[in-house]
Image 1 (cartoon, rainbow, N blue to C red):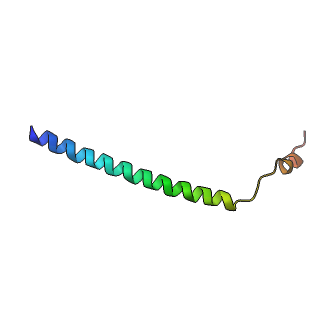
Image 2: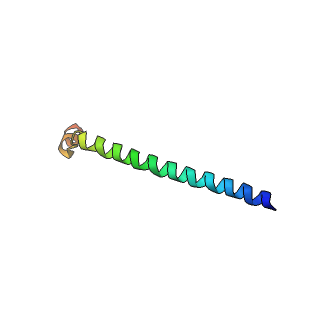
Image 3: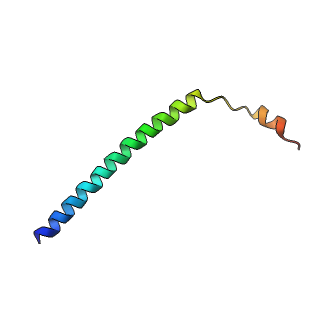
Length: 54
């Protein structure tokens, strides 16, 4: 019966570690995305309307 608790404990620790890793990566990616948006050129709807031939 102790083997089951050992396996469950190891699996639980692995899941927690994976969650921490994914949260850190998500925060880092979000900061990078926001930084890229700050440096991206502005999109104007007027520019897109010039290309429409309606």
